[in-house]
Length: 287
Image (cartoon, rainbow, N blue to C red; front, top):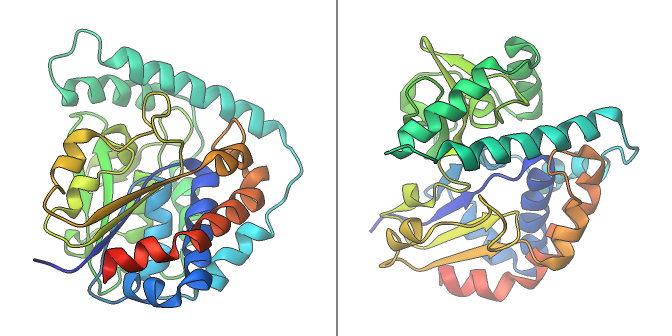
């Protein structure tokens, strides 16, 4: 059996803040548990917002350094917050309708990919550059880091890692490319969108690892895409695993819009509180 895995799900700007807060709180509540998660042989699986956190952690940077920008994030509302809320509502509707009359998950994702390609978004180069600025390092780490994305044309799922030979920032930007909000990212002649279009966590990629901790910055059983599927969990049925969803207080801190950067600080604090409380559970998982 391979070593353990940390699976980091999508959840927008608030998800990044919550996951970093959770891990920082875990360090405060049980430093040994966090130390095990950060061991070099632990696999990191990152989807969408989780891909940012996974790449950050894989750099080896101190958690305090990674969390501080979230705690200091601007809390003043902006016009873009309203626009992104309606964009999220629209993609949720597109995702729901994409399954109607399709015979495969890939076919449904092709419909979403067509929407992503046709949407008027910002510059792809600017988008990748903005992700690059958030990452502590530009090179792939030595540890096993898996970044997920979906091909907009074929609907096929792709996993990027160090052996893929692609730029790390481009892989993370592709994984975070919410259709209709951010532009699909060009990699090796193909265009890719958010890995969350397959699954919010893609936890099945951790199959073969033991134990597995899955962080999901959403309410359990939330509408549409909020939960890790039974099929994913079935791949881990012979593995010690734990899914940590955002609790009621954390969901309240997020607000209605996961892309709203004005609630990053509150989301980070909520994650920190949950992480502190989770120490015994995570320690038992890795014992």
